[in-house]
Length: 311
Image (cartoon, rainbow, N blue to C red; front, top):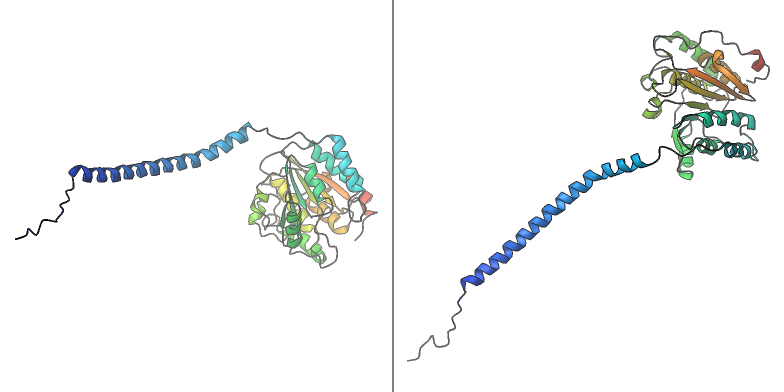
């Protein structure tokens, strides 16, 4: 009788082999755990250290570049004023503005109503500060920003009409203690002449220089510049920091709307000079308890300007 187990092979698993396989898996699991923890710690540390590094670099960087030399400013103004096209400012007008910008302590805050042929000039002359442009045409504002990435431009919707100027000025006088008071945050204003849809930071910045060269159109149904002039007067009187003085330039100052609105809200007493079609006003920071724009309430134009004005 044959033994049925004669060809049977017996395989024995040594306990050491089982322990070795289990041990390898434990080591692999431990390695993966340690690697994961190390990665998370590194990620957290890196994210926390980035702001500190940026702040350190910013603190170590110089506070500002030197201002443009006067010959450079003169050259820019010269070539801009001799540009072969119509509609640009004269050399005398540009020089008035450039002289103020050159003396403005950096960082100088410049607010410009209107995107014009001088837009790049104002940006260049104020290279140490912040220059913000406001325009009535949102498509043109977007075009200028796309073509010149360094330009900061915003659009605004005007609700006024030149034909309604007298009524709007009368309304502002009647509500001077309420909606149209000289000292207020226009972001929350309901005054018909105040611009309350500018970007929020426009109401927080202490503007050193404000240039009014827009809106462009001048016909009865056009918005006119009553709102920018009123807004400039309020921003100058309500500024919280910086220099107590604000330089306000009004272009086309010899026209009826610009002249009358400036006399009402910027005041003849604050007119320091005028050249060609540009008026230069200097306004002091105001008092919230004072409810008048000008010490004198007369709005008749100065005799030296009335003779050359146009409607």
